[in-house]
Amino acid sequence: MPNQSLPKAVYEQLADFRYKLRIFIHFSENAAREVGLTPQQHQLILAVQGYPGRDYATISEVAEKLQITHHACVGLVTRCEKSALVKRRPNPADARSVHIALTDKGIELLGRLSAVHLMQLQNLQFDLTSVEDIL
Image 1 (cartoon, rainbow, N blue to C red):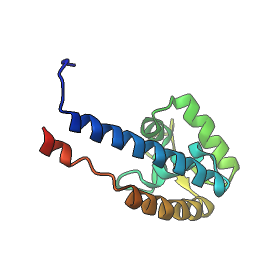
Image 2 (image 1 turned 180 degrees about the horizontal axis):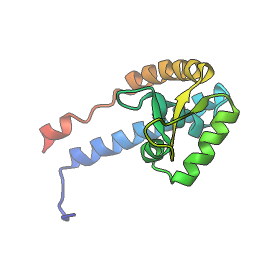
Image 3 (image 1 turned 90 degrees about the vertical axis):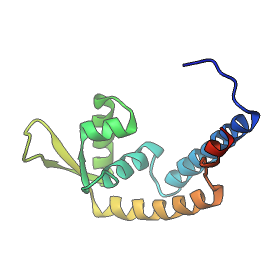
Image 4 (image 1 turned 120 degrees about the horizontal axis):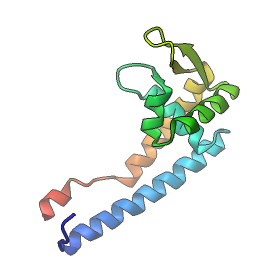
């Protein structure tokens, strides 16, 4: 990465973005705990339900989305399954993997959490589009 000095306004905007990101993450973790989930469980059910083009995902796909190891993802899926948030289904295209889908309980909790998360995002007014104007 080249060592270049950027305008002060860029650093200010990046610092503000990082600050808002920390606020959002802190908010998200607390919101998950308020409905009885760990932040990791919330991230998993969001990754599954938010997988592009379908309402299920494989463990490998979720591990990639969460940036965790396959082994850690298996453990997280197992904990979510025990909490009745997700269910495993056979993958008809590949017997070596399974599809992870949300249960009704998982969908209900994710819906509640997503509604408050959308409001929080609106309140924080994330916007990096003006960085291009500065550069």
